[in-house]
Length: 71
Image (cartoon, rainbow, N blue to C red; front, top):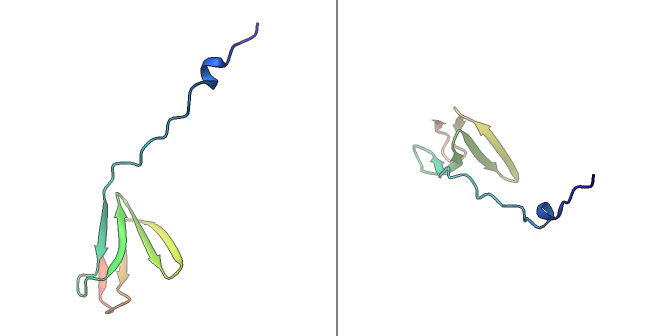
């Protein structure tokens, strides 16, 4: 018995919108320099040409003033 796939082929794939997680900036407590952007339980850090996606908690030293920061 042959199956008809016309109903499946005529449907378009639905594109889901990005998650409703709001992006929150992580800034230095001393000089207010941007250290990363938090997306839920992950933090996006960009240093020069490198991109890092890390999980929380995170500790970092500000590259501008040298103050230790934690989120």
